[in-house]
Image (tube, rainbow, N blue to C red; front, top):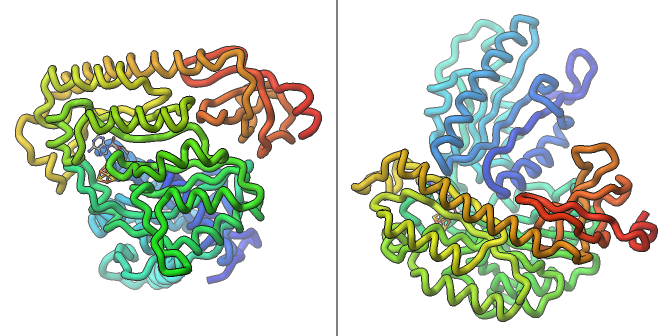
Length: 470
Ligand code: 5AD
Ligand code: SF4
């Protein structure tokens, strides 16, 4: 494969990311794998020679979006071909893993289907796709259109991926754990991402050091079940997430540490203590609870009741009183009655969340939930979701307003919607917009919070800190 197009331009890749932060991380790693092949990043699919859709399978709507996007790309590909050029289309991520060949059957314009464990093999897959395209241009009829790799190789992809490259605005994701053995009855992740796997602690620490050298001051440790982390350490012992967080905090230059996503069952004493003991660990925790009803939690196979969650929150808040809690909720799981839903509303009332994600239950083929009786009608799901979101929205607004008047460190990440505005995050992961110089992006600057809204706060950069950083 050459790195120069016939018109003398470099090849360009456009990666569209759907779904969770694991996918955001993976998309960056795919860009890292493609860079040595001469691929520069394109800002739009129109500018690209290769389009990668990094897909999400978690809810039906997420996977259906992929097929409509593929329809548009097929049209673009036909137009290009009429002009004597080509467009390579690759489907990556969880839809690729779950549906494999079915994707090519539904959309024959797809050249490559690559699962999340095989991204290091993208160069070979591209070469193979190129070879097939050349044969087809020469008039050969080939059986089976696309090139597929959805293996779960025994060895980890991490051993084969190049070192991470760019850090955006001081912030970096670091994947430390993949897969899930929990088998919640609504969830496809154990099927698409495979069994739980933790990267060795030394590999994580060396990637963290590389990220810091590349400009990261905030590191978010990622995993489908990140607090189930149990990585092998150099001395043969096993490190927990808490131990790993302490080691990352010792790296010079790490100002902020976050981790996501956690399971309540894996919140151990050490990790709770770390929230009080490690200053760089931000006072924010995303801890999905899904439901406030014991009956539904059991049917979901969450393996804990509402009491355990409430007690956990109490202990976390005892360790770190200003902790902002976030969570995920599903409404309309099969068998959920009005009384079960009321239990969820009461849990939200009792705990108080700074932010949350909530979803209507989506029936996923192959998961136990999809075969359960008493599926909840769509209209009931919609009404419950609206009620829950109204309550969660009110709590998010109240939380934001509670910080008004405080001067807090903000890590600025990007320019805002209005000219002269920059936007960043507080320690509690709230968005703050303020007037400020773009040079502050990637830095932590003190800002006074002056107005609280549903999804953001207005801030004023504190002049002294502003001058020091700018
Ligand atoms: N339907 C609705 N929401 C789901 N989630 C996972 N699977 C489903 C499903 N089948 C939600 C859960 C999870 C989040 C990432 O997505 O709340 O925590
Ligand atoms: Fe899915 Fe449950 Fe595993 Fe989370 S813990 S990834 S919701 S199966």
